[in-house]
Length: 267
Image (cartoon, rainbow, N blue to C red):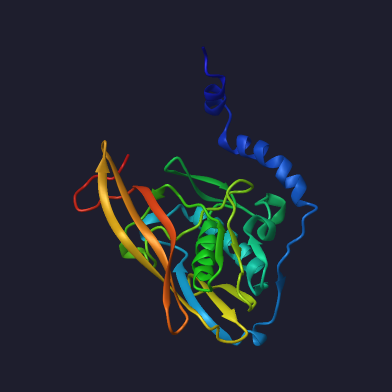
């Protein structure tokens, strides 16, 4: 029997299939306004954590036009989320706050990953902001409600400033990033572009009673049936000054897309 679905996937461009799947969610988004409000940073005097990541990496360099589109999309989303506050008891949803990546909303065709290959798509590159937001949220004690990550490890650790597997993949409308504030203090996020990098801070009105740190365990590379993999476990340590508790956040496994100690990358 002929596999009609496979034939359609081969003949219908990926962008067309994505737009068809997105259409109902896009229509619904017109009636859904953002839930999180914005506030002045002046009332959030305690900076709990800050981080930065380069907009351009040597190992993942793109054509100039694609790179510029990526930076444009990142700036667009960073401006949308900058100074956003997650109140106690509130759950942040990336799709609710950012909305669909449409042309008329200012998004351009930037780099995306599909099946381990780089292609272009509307809003491509904004996962870098999602990665930043997730990393900041972990250091603010936010509860992870929904989080996805790429099944591919794209670049080596020479350019990595956080443990492998601490990113968040978003793809409207199916792959969302949701984090809940279960504490008693509101949390404010700062996101901005400066000196060729994406910068971020997470702030509180006052210093919280707990501190959060992220640790990696069980890291290894291994080959299985000719494919090179990488895996680890990510824990969050919660320290209230008298006791420290560990919370398992993720068990990561990904296909490696670069050479490691002479082992060939997965084709």
